[in-house]
Length: 251
Image (cartoon, rainbow, N blue to C red):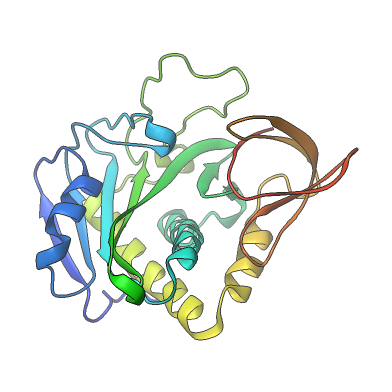
């Protein structure tokens, strides 16, 4: 994996920010190209489905602001770009490929615990040219494990990268993440989703095991068979093959 900062990609480091995703969306109209925004302190972090993201000092909170090519429907594939880049950055930081796995759709696990999360947010549609701005938010427990009130019984425990023996500053981790993201994004743009799908399945947690997918309206339990060409989860259940575009996963 290259560790050279990607050409044409900006970098902004802020001592404190409410939310790196919110800051990315605010700044996006004035940015000349894709730009990483790193917050050394984040006071109002956000997670999927409107949840808060607790962010102790020393952990990693950054967002890539970009204007993606292609159709708005393809934007969700950037969560796979981010997940695969995170995996590579964590392996580069620790030398421990065996310790990490990807939990569909985009969490990174360390020794079975949740290490990192990803949140994609968009702003505006530019006519037929597609999405105007995309914020790819990434949070990693580099230094500390957040205290999570009301953690669900089946939810995976939070862990920090220090569990794998790595002690790393957020700026240093960004130096690993940004090149990895650029490489996976290049594969997506050049070859389509195929290489990312293959890469994700090779790193997927609980592939072939029985898992539960909770959507907004139902819980579906079945064998994790694969992810399809659109990135959806495919479960083999007693009621037949189920294709799930979005859900929370429980093991």
